[in-house]
Length: 317
Length: 178
Image (cartoon, rainbow over all chains, first blue to last red):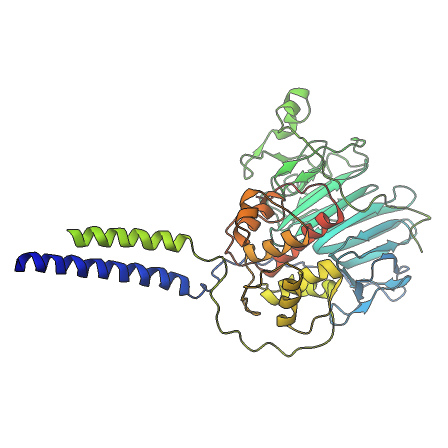
C-alpha cells in the first residue's frame, strides 16, 4: 500500500512537473524578447567613382526641370544637404539631385536631346553633363526608383548613361525604362524602341573587367553586352525586358534592329540562366525558333507607367 | 518511465503551443517617443533617408504607409500615426509596436494589404494577421520570399513601397519576386 501510494505520488509529481515545464516553456517562448535583428547586411554598393573633372564655368546650357506632376518633387544642388521644392523651369547642373515621392513625377531635359522622366518614389543624380555643338555626354546615377530615358537620334551624337549600383546602361537614340530596387539590388530594364542598347555590370561582376562607358569606348568583350531580342544577362539586364528582379522574361514589341553599334564596340555575350557564372553559347539559343520555343512561356506582359517620352520640341518647357 | 512519458508529452505540448504563438509581439515598455514635431513628413525625403539607413523602424514604415494613402504624413508622432492607421483599419487595435524597432515583413505586409485593398484568400479571411498578409504580399509580388517575422532594411522598404505605389496606380500585376 505504501509502495502504491509512493508510486501514485511519483506519478502525480511527474505530471505536475511536466505541466509546469510545458507552461514555462510556452510562456518563455511567448515572453521572449524579439531577437535582435541578425539579418546579414547587404553588401555596400560599389562606390561610384566619378573622376570626371568639373564642368568649366562656361559650360553647356543647364538641364531644365519641368513637366512636374504631383507636389512632392524636390531637388538639391549641394549634394543632398539642402532640398528645395522642384519648380517648372529650374536649371540643373552637374551634381544636382532630383527626388520624387508618391504620385510625383518630373522631367529633366538636356538641351532637347535627352530627356529623363523621373518616376514616383525615385532619385536621380546628374553625375556628368557635357554638351557641345555636335555631341553630348550625360551620366545619371539611379540609387533607387525608376527613370524613363529618351535620347533623340540624329544631328547631335548623344551618349547617355544611367548607372545603378549594380549596372550601367548606355543609351543612344532610343527610349529605355530603368528601375532599380535597392533592397534586392536588382535592375529592371526595358527598351521601348529600336536603337542600340549596351549593358554592362558595374565593377565587373560576374563578367570581370571594367564597365563600359564613354571613357572606355573600346571595352573588352567580356565586359559589355550587345543586347538583342530575347537575350538576357545573368544578373540584371536584357534588351527585351529582363525581369531579373522578378525572374521572368517578357517580350515586348518593337523594332529589333540594332543600329550603330559595331561588333568591336560591344562584344556579344550571354549567360545561361541556369548557371550565371559560366558563359554559354546562349546567343545562339535566341536566334532561331527552336531556341525561342524552349524559352519559358510567357502569359502576360508588364505595363510600365509613364507613356511616351516627347523628344525634341516638346522637351523644353 | 511514466515520468518520461509525461515529460515527452509536455515537451510536445510546449512545441505545439510555441508554433501557435501570437502574431503580435508581446507588449513591452514603449520608450518615450522622440521629440514630436508638427512638420509633415513627405515621402520623397523619407525614401531618400531610408535608402541609406540600415533598418526601417516601425515609425518610418507607418509614416510611409500614411504617405502612400494621403500624400504626406501630418501626424505628430508614432503614437498618433499608429492610432491613425488603426482608425482606418490598417492596423489592429491590439498591436503594440515600438517606434524604434525594425518593422517586420508581416507588419508591413498587413498594412499594405489593407491599404491596397488586397482581399486575399480564405486563410486571410479566417485568420487575418501579418502571417497570411505576408503570404498574400508575396503572391502579389510586393515582397520577396522569406519569413513574416524577418526585419526589413531601409533599402528593402524603399523597393517594396515603390512596388506598392505601382500597384496603387493600377498596374495589372507584379510578377512575384524570388
